[in-house]
Length: 176
Image 1: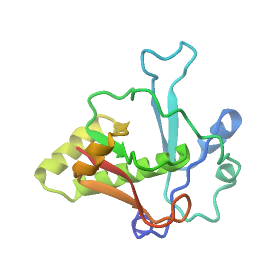
Image 2 (image 1 turned 90 degrees about the horizontal axis):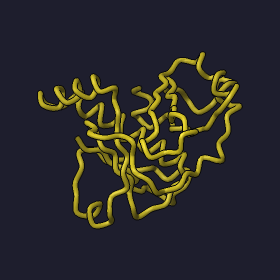
Image 3 (image 1 turned 90 degrees about the vertical axis):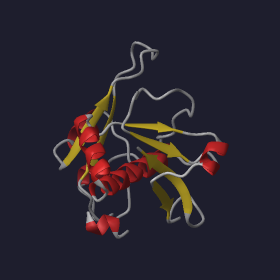
Image 4 (image 1 turned 180 degrees about the horizontal axis):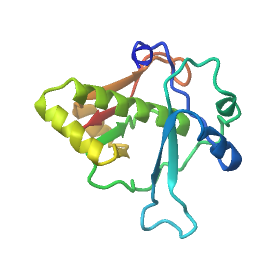
């Protein structure tokens, strides 16, 4: 974690289904599932994400190297299926990111929120325990530009600009 926090490990988002999804389950990590919102079509299954133990970009396990990078663009409309979250993550409405980039930035915001709570005051540590008992669920929203510009959050993620941006760019933030 220290290497990741010291910016020596980059976040990587890939997508998998079928056999490739099954193959990565043997690697150290955590899988989280969330049921679709009630208004989703009946054939919609749960959303699943797997986070792996932080590691250098190269080499990656062969199971991860085989996963797709493209094809992660999702529609920007729709409400979050998460209600009454302990942590809300906001995506900067002034910028455009691929879904994979947004996923990585939201994960980064959640990690920084966890760290801030872990090393915060008694109220923060109590909030962390509440979040833990809630399964570390988060709600992701894109606020209005006015809200983004006028609001201050406890955690801000500023992307270094190695991939989709031309230099440091505020991408997400977390509040609790």
